[in-house]
Image 1 (cartoon, one colour):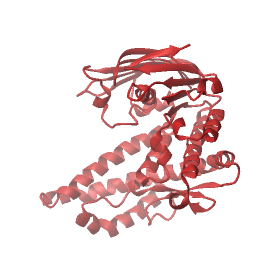
Image 2 (image 1 turned 90 degrees about the vertical axis):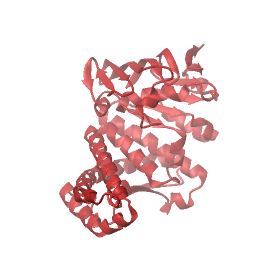
Image 3 (image 1 turned 30 degrees about the vertical axis):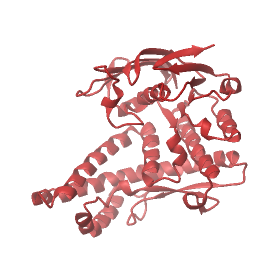
Length: 369
């Protein structure tokens, strides 16, 4: 998969810019706050119809524009295709692929990307939310139904949270609490099955990458964690649903007392073990970065296995956070597909990869010769 050309109109700080990318490595240089990450954000949007930086599409429309547009020619599934996305505050986003209307979740059927940004360097040490997001982003790319389930889960979760927060002032809200709890249990059961299956594949793929990356001295293992009453996350959705209902029943009063939703797939986590020891508790900074990078490269390999094509790899200002050894490992692993790398300096990336270099300043992009 490759983004051949992209045009941005009113997107973030871009008034009107067009970029012709190399099919291999693209280095996007410039000072901070000039628009480098905005460009990667637009490419990311082509794969899922949402940003990795904000939940609010209106924030993507630059000041003083009334709407924003992303128009891209891509090569995917063996042919050239055109993706057009229009964002207008107060209106539903309009997405078309080759002129045919699509939803955001359907974009994954055309374009896949793997993003690695500075926040991902903390994927092991930070809270569980960042690891769930890692799973959600990855699974949604290869299983569009999962993305739809996740949207439904978030809707139910927000509604139930409002009930738990407000029921003391409006006791009639409790009339609907059990219905929302049941819905959350049903959707959670399906999300848990997807996550458990994906973690098996990710665990298989990441081991070899991590051993090579760490000099074959360490073994990385990922373990999936969900609510305690789920006996087998690979069981049928019906069996998992019953297990989650048991958890819900025992925690109902605690939810009412705390005004928090305590049962569901939002309690899931992934444990990273290096040589059998908790990475979150004991790993060094270098070990955590090596593990995080290995996971993202494994994600890329899984999409290749699934689709027969490399996804577009987006590396947002992460090389500056890595020592020379880790930089070299990443740069040596990105062959075979298209990569976009942002950085304040090019770190000789162009000479090390033969990549095409762009310079971004004040929302303007120019190729460097």
